Length: 113
Length: 113
Image (cartoon, rainbow over all chains, first blue to last red):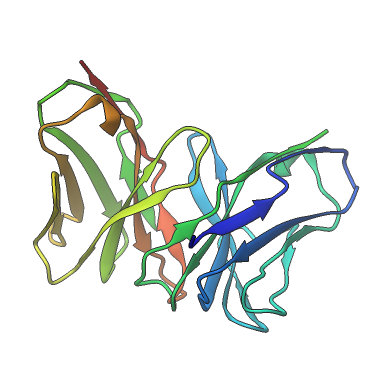
């Protein structure tokens, strides 16, 4: 089944404790992206990747890191989480870029205390 | 600055009626626009993409229009059903980066039997 998977689905952590949210897709997509969703603000893009070893900032990259060492995986790293990073995070992929259907993962709900 | 506006108030309609959702944007000249459906606690699911040179696009009971003069897209669901109840998001390419996708905050639709 074609899908985007994220782990963990739910995470409670404390300020400053590094964490990684994994994202994997099995559709051989070149383009992958991370979003955060907050009430009233909609989905905001954090980072995106056009292909292996090619990443770029979205609209809200501060406090986040990403890497794309393999085509199927695109982990999101929070080096020192803060409470304002409490949010619902979605990973998405598409075949080649913007003018394509974006396939979203199920989401990761993060609470930073 | 770039702005996408979707009605933040929920739209309540009776089953069988046509639901019409609006997406307005400013300071954009997007080449295309996408609509997604999002159910509570789940990732968005792609519905339709319409390009700037297309006035209208249909898929089963769904119809999308794109008026680049008015800077507006309308999303219609005909013969609505309770199963259509969800939040609907519009998305446009962001300026300053070919692969940035900017989402509206979404409009919640509730279809009552």
